Amino acid sequence: MKALILEDMPESQEMLCELAAVAFPGIECVCVADVKSALVQATECFQLALIDLSLPDGSGIDVIQKMAMACPACTLVVATIFDDDDHLFPALRAGAHGYLLKDEAPEVLARQLQGIREGRPPLSPSVARRMLSHFRGIPDAVQEEQKNLLSPREREVLGQLALGISIAAIAQEMGISHHTVGDHVKNIYRKLNISSRAEAALQARNMGLM
Image 1: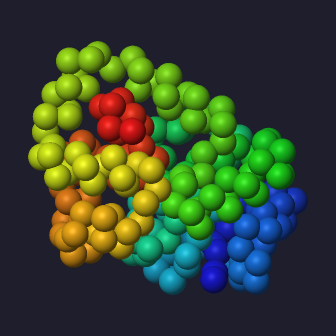
Image 2: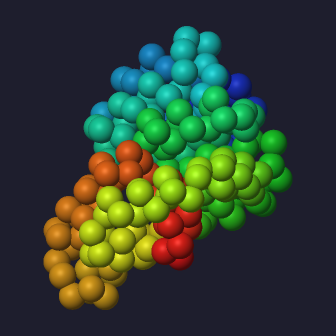
C-alpha cells in the first residue's frame, strides 16, 4: 500500500506516517508539504491519503477534489485541527471519506484508521457528534422527502452501505451483481447530493434505515 501525507509541519508529518504504519503495517508514505506538490502526486495510485486543510499555498480541499476524481479507490481522510462546520462539511462535499482531529490521542486516531479495513468511516468522536447534531436540525418533512427520492432497492442499499458493508457483500446479500449495486450507489449519491460513506451513514440514520 501507498499513502500520501499532505502536511506542512515536519513533526505532524512524522506522526501521521506513524499512524498509517500502525493501521496498515508495511505501508509506504509519500510526504508533501504544500498543495502544489500534492496536486502533482494526486494522479498516482494511492490507497490512503491523509490531508491537512490549511497549507501555505492553499486548501487541502482542492487536493481532495482532484484525488476523488483521479483515484476513486483511494480513501481520503482529512487530518486537521479544525472541527468547525466551515471546514468539516466542505471537505465532505469535496469527497473526503473521513475527518480526524490531530489533537486526538494517537491510539484513538490509529483505531479510526484501522476501521477503514472494516468499511467504517474514520471520524474523530467529536466530529461524529457534530455531524449528528447538524443533521438532527433537518426538519422531519425534509428527511421524509429525501427518503422518498429513493426507490425501495436504493433504500435497502443505503442502509447496508451505511453499516460499512462492502459492495460485493451487498450484491451477494441482495442477489444482484456488484455492477447493479454500484449503479444504485451512484443514484443514491446523486439524489441525496452526497459523495462519501460518512455522509451516507448520516443520511441513513436520519431516514431510520439503520
